[in-house]
Length: 300
Image 1 (cartoon, one colour):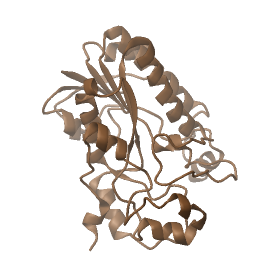
Image 2 (cartoon, helix red, strand yellow; image 1 turned 45 degrees about the vertical axis):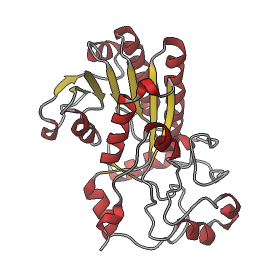
Image 3 (cartoon, helix red, strand yellow; image 1 turned 180 degrees about the vertical axis):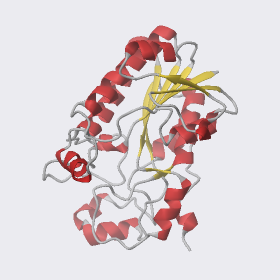
Image 4 (cartoon, one colour; image 1 turned 60 degrees about the vertical axis):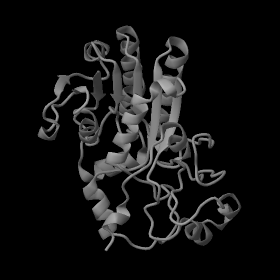
């Protein structure tokens, strides 16, 4: 089977390639050539924002791992100011919306025309709306851990594009029968990042909107492959939270709630030990996936 990986020159694509190349014909699609750690697979130059490039990329493809995206809100005032302060080149304000929505639309339409069977997109847990807040309003938490049906409250273009992207894929499932799936990963961590987390671990000094979420790169790649391979037994469209089983905090999770968010204690009683604040129960039940890696492996 031929599998296309968009965003093929990105950091996570390396782990997606490792998870697939021994058993599938893998094609990478990106504007820039991939690094040498992706040797042995085909690279096709192209841009998600160009429909003709997407049509060329999906020729002969049966499944797509859609990783390509602008990974932050390009119009966020504080993010743009931080880039300006560092002297970095600042992208157009609409870069995130254009690539993450229109680029995904072009890819999906090309997939339908080419007869692609399955699309698995790496979304983001930012679709909840807890990160990249713009207003002074806190993210409204209804219960912990958060799961796929928890209400969203997005404010920024990146979070909105990821949430809207989920519905865009669902619309293609409804209209064309394309099997579409979205993972909601938190901070994606290669092994060296997990080790750095352990080496720099300190006790929490307060609550964080990011809620100590992370996932190992290998675990996310495994989940995406499992979804692709089990697609025929899954709902035609589904969204799966993708997180480690534990949090990135040293303290037990309920202790953090008691100390910094006691208002959430009545809706947090399911938390035990170092449980993550994002529930992976659906991926466990429907896909049979279980995270295999944790930053705690590196704790001395």
